[in-house]
Length: 238
Image 1 (cartoon, one colour):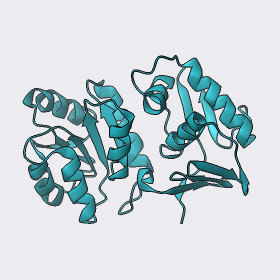
Image 2: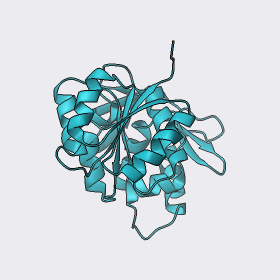
Image 3: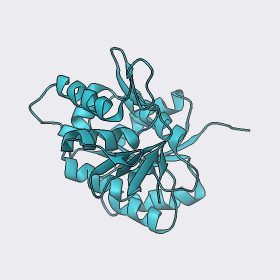
């Protein structure tokens, strides 16, 4: 019996699917290809993928519309969106509509495989992704995403807006090694005129507020030379 996880790759550019599908298969996945959102919706039922990798900009039914239709139908198969738009508002809208992650084109195929495996580790079958939850909890830590406020053991944390946004990104990507460059892109924007030291400064701010010891972290682990990982278990809160 074939035990390979099934991926559905959706992109209207043949040059991308012709190269990416074999790469994903060599990485240990079974892959089906669709060329627009309508075909993807049909295959989501017949192929029953474990995860969908879907371009946003496609003819007929685009990626975000296909994602909306999946979620409206109660299908919570994890979805990673591929986009050429780097604005934070575009990313936020995609996540609010039910995407589990996104990746900007052009991208390194190895990075895509890492994202696929990270998403598949953290998703819970049949349940909405953490990115759609209004409130997230990890032990005594509670984040209200709509209010942009966080509490630890009932005490509100005095976080700057960027530190709060950084905490939100880490909480929606638990147990995933995230590079400083990726955090910089996700929180500050791909064209923001700053460096990765800014990320370290805000991580230090979060640790002070959380009382988190870098040597024995309850929440944020440093992986030397690579980035950060949120090590606490995260759940959607009522």
